[in-house]
Length: 288
Image (cartoon, rainbow, N blue to C red; front, side):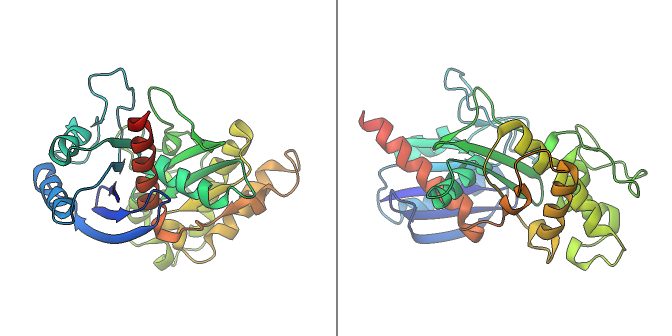
């Protein structure tokens, strides 16, 4: 058996499962101070017997450079107390097994690609929730190098009715995450998107997400974009995103790109399934 950790800014999802990503046991705990959260997570794994490997799919930013002394660390996150946390080192020392490590969205992208791979060789996964982040998978390999894509921090053109909102990103203000994430929606209107009664609210968010989708199709030539996260659970939003993507394209890219924007096949299990796949990859690498 192998283990998986989906480390989120609000909660940690833990799982015991198989190398194919099948979840056997699952547990959720609140993300608090690193020492408390990691200690509780470790105890959960220890009380369920030894695991052969662990996969960690974490919020970031992360140091993914294997040559770096900080590999396995959460780096400059605004999450209080978690900056420079050696999350890989913590689990590896206490559980004594190989550890796979990547962003939560890269892991989710890997899991969704695995679910869609009978039809697609390339796929992007983007979560739209507390933050906006994404990963791209090409032929089973996650796109990245010494760092990882930061899809949520691209610049987007302003919606005509959204000129005065400053944005909530502490680094960039009105980047995509600053304008279209869950906190941005609540800062602008005081409610979750599905509860906002302001005319054109959903259209405004779709305007920003449509730009992101078109940029991904144009730059990476992915065959499919999967949109997950709490904001994307808003009824009717994905249809609006498809419409805006099609309008931006205006017939330039191959026909039908708006139909290649989908919700996750794995539902809310994309991240933790991806963490188990990271564990499987780490176990395979340890055997070679």
